[in-house]
Image (cartoon, rainbow, N blue to C red; front, top):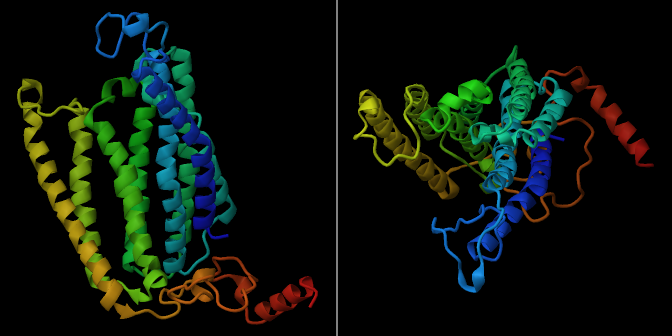
Length: 384
């Protein structure tokens, strides 16, 4: 299967196993807010922060506030991978297409996606290093968090291996996919800092955290989403998006995205906290104000740059250049057999038989005498 399909399959398992935990937390929260139970409220404490008895003599008794954090983060950390794992598969498809090579290390790529999904379930408490947890438990979560770097590094190495020696074409989907890989590396490296408990005690709830999550989710995931929309746009609508406008959009997004979020690492190390409406009254942070102004200006330009994508999308939907059957010269099944745009049932008439893997560029098996032999083998297996 293409790696996009593998990534979506493993992501669905993540969603299936983690979302019920969030649902249970919301249910317990609802009961607490309606003064039916006190799962999260400690004794002699109410939602109004006053010691009082409600009607009927109800009062919280024996609740555990940190239980809410545990249940919330048990879902919300896998949720990060629910967002990024599908884009890892998308980037693999795009890079293989425009490097004209098979994905390097196909099986390790699948195992790495599964490994990231598994480790994502057992590291949730690295968000809670400052909650007063046992240092031995904190060490366990710190080490398990750092282990996520291993399957992530395997994926990055294999993406680079796919590019190595390839006949690379720098189309707009390829530029977005390469941006995804490079930004994911930066976001992953900053994540290792936060995984270390002694470092996290300092940078927790500073703008360093904001920089990290945006490098992973915006600079990483959203860049791959842009690339995937442009890549599969001909399959959806039968027309091509304007390549020049797409590259201008990529350039503006890439430049101002980095100017916006990389600077947040710097002010985060400087100690600037999150979730403050204004820091002007704090003399400690006055020297960071010019950089905050720069971040604001770059963020506004970044936001307005997305108008180019919207114009390109809707204009190309109706007036774009008509797409060929396989405009990207890809080798996956949706391009080689399904019409563009794909109609009801995807394939009219007889469903095609798959004789070869999805990524088959510069492979010895693509020899002219191999494909007819594979058809003979396929026909023999089908009893024809």
